[in-house]
Image (cartoon, rainbow, N blue to C red; front, side, top):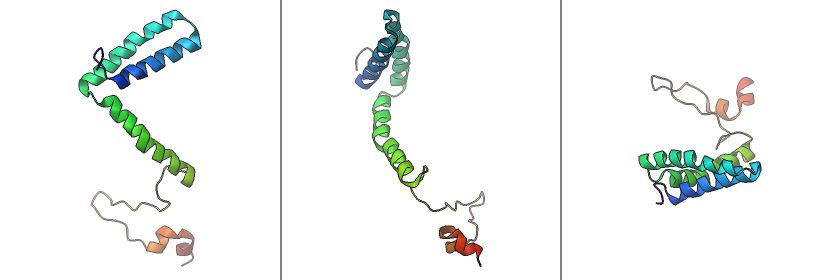
Length: 108
């Protein structure tokens, strides 16, 4: 840890600040690093691994989300309909073909 934040937070602060500086070409924009550092310090005070967990989430769950979005054209890992239980814990009585092939079940 450096200056109350982890290296990942320090790197994220540096990237955001320098990108803003390159876009605006104004030296005063470098002062934006101070409030960003304060927010990062508050997050790291609550959980020191916050930014490491955020990076891990981005490397695993976010990639899987976009891959399933590309494959299924939606944010799902399966093309099947979920039959979740209601508030009493019961599922609706449905035929298995109605879930997999709705057109076949409609002809019956």
